[in-house]
Length: 128
Image: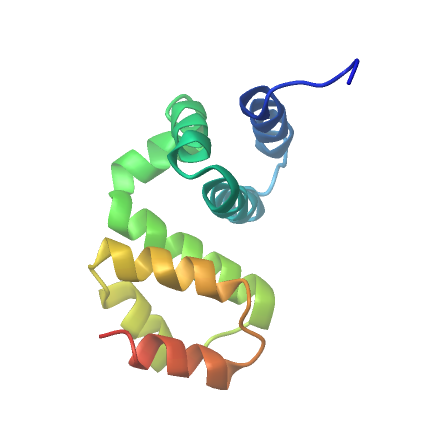
């Protein structure tokens, strides 16, 4: 292909476009989804590109300041709120109390395919 670019270069360009989104919550939601897509198709290579990019952005500073787990919790809540508009308090509490990074990452991945609050409840209450 005459105009082909590497995945890393394409991902960096997408990240720059996302960074121009004015709404912080929407921007974080897109970054979370892009991270998930990158990890599914490239494993750690895509994640490394995203991490490298995030470290120099407002979102990266926010993740550092809030802590990785809290950043994951917030990302999940943003995705779910975008999807459902509101969440029951008991689900919100379970998500914000979850400290296991692998469970949080699994929830973020699964959140993309959840279509109902019942499916969401099944996911968060069957985590162990």
